[in-house]
Image 1: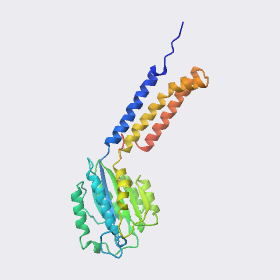
Image 2: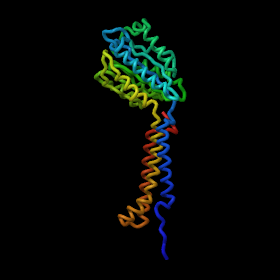
Image 3: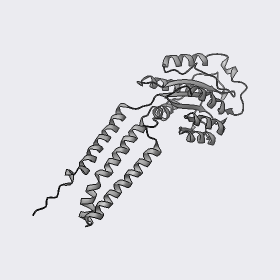
Image 4: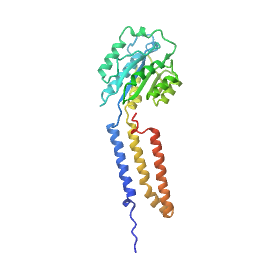
Length: 307
């Protein structure tokens, strides 16, 4: 009697994972192209207004570092206005041991934010409010004020972006407070030095830290590029969902390979008998699945938190 041995592709253990791989890859592509699952975002941007940002020139003069900061904010707001669900944004200042509000409240309208920002920066009293200047600005004040603002934004991813030079101080208590409110501390440091405490704060809160940004009071648009490429794209990414679907596709792939490994590699090439061959193939799929799930959980599941 002839015994018919089905082809690998005829087994449900092969074609079911094959279909799932295709489905999960299609979902990853769809989510990536349409930016599906992007969470609503609330951002507080804090700009350095100390005298080093307009040294030898008038407050917020064209081409100064301060003006470059403002132009970077304008570029962020312009890109933000193109989103289906724009970020809510509020802007603070850093200087004189204070964190003055440069816009009145959280808003997603580009025109409203730009109008309020320009109005505050053109206020002749603002430079005097930032005096006297301490040797180092206390970022605890900025973080505490930003925390009060952001904790009111329910169901939003909360981001604090601080632009400052290296003359700053920060304490762990402020970082702990931000962490407790699920606020990410993002830092952009201009100058030739780094700020280890601020780097640590960004890492602890899963934020972005960028330093060694060389700016001068003679103009340039480098800050705009950093704002858009390093911060705006990250704040508005749905990478967690893309990573989730790719992880699901990888798990399906492990199970897709069970029969090919069993039939073609272990039995065909290595001449193993059916039982140990099948156990090894299944073991590889189990281990691969466990490792992939562990990495997905470690990286954050969008079903639990999309931020």
